[in-house]
Image: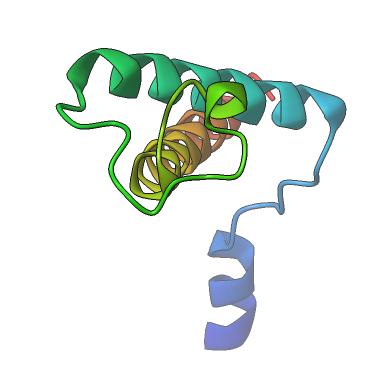
Length: 86
């Protein structure tokens, strides 16, 4: 009895789609733009092989902004799924 009630309370799984990929890409671009204006020392060592390709960011700045972008993107995707938009 309790197991069937518990299984009924589990939300449906969110499957990957191109819409989700686009949302994640846009969230990462937004996070990189925010990082470009807020990080005091973006070119801190260790440097990346083609720093101008990464906007002059060093490895710590790239890892920080993309990590923030993924957290932001996951929140947006889960929020939109929760309200039924995705």
